[in-house]
Image (tube, rainbow, N blue to C red; front, side, top):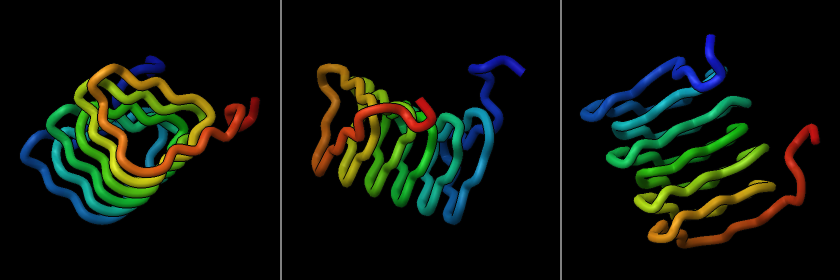
Length: 113
C-alpha cells in the first residue's frame, strides 16, 4: 500500500457518531462526532465537520474541527480550515485564511524523534 493511500473514507452526506481507530490514512468529508485515535493521518475535507477528541499522528484540516486535538507529528491547516478548541503538536503549518479559535501548544519535537 502506498504511503498516501486512503484506507477509509466517510463521504459527503455521511454522519458518524462514536469512536474511530485506524492505521494508515482516513479521510472525512461528512460529519463525525466522537473520538479519533490513530498513529496515522486524519484528513478532514473542506465540507467536513468533526467534533470531539482527536489523537493522531498527523492532521490535515480543510474543513471544520471543534474539540481537543493532539497530533504527535504535525498539523496542517489549509486556507478553508476552521479550528475551535485546544491543539497540541510539535509542528504546525497554517495557510493564510485558516481560522483558529482557542489554544495552541507547540510541544517541541515530534514523538519518537
